[in-house]
Length: 298
Image (cartoon, rainbow, N blue to C red; front, side):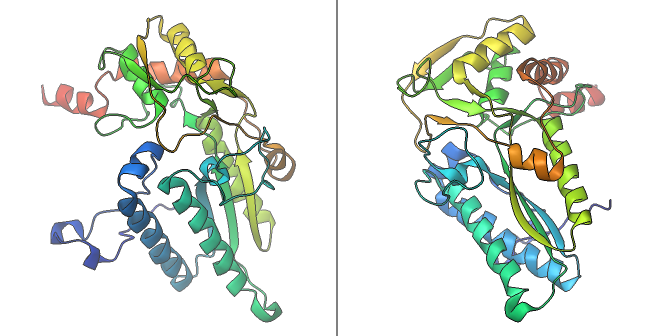
């Protein structure tokens, strides 16, 4: 595989010329997206338009899109299958950009098959359910800029002493066993293997436009995750209760049967594995990659 770094937003969007050559990342925090929705819409959608034009121009006709379980919004039935309604009841701008991009990809693919014309385009959409963990070596892990927006990086930073306590956003969800939000957590190595499975799937198909859930099918609450991280780290993780966070739903976990049937993919790592590997990364890198740079300078 060859990897390329591209500027995916038109330079006219940047007032600072030095930013014109920066690479673009998709914004991906539920809570933050409710506070700065325009940044999410501009960044995520414009990047998609430019990327698809470039892929078409250079005859690169395969794409694996990292979507999200947030496209399902609030669902009454768990676990969630790919046939569940999407686009309705989405509670945040992040999820809406993911849904919009899925629709853009669908329209784009359909445009290539108008009038019964043949196409070699292949699109696989992977709807993630909360990836966590790190590489088992502890050398590669998630290092958020500033205050982490996602639960487990924050929990890990509390465990290592970088932050005083965790705030649990909401403990009054009647649908869950302890009142805190329930999610399907997936080891990042299982997620990486899901991408490889998607690439292999596309190689076997002349053309496709499909959606797969990637998750374990098991839901864990916020307090379940705190206890699991305490077990992995041997540390007590202090927390306090706070109000619900805008944009959150009570529970969300996957039915990933389709990925197993069609791509021969299944999550093989459990919650203990996720927390063990996350703690290995965080304990070896208490200040993240910035700590490595400081050590090198000394």
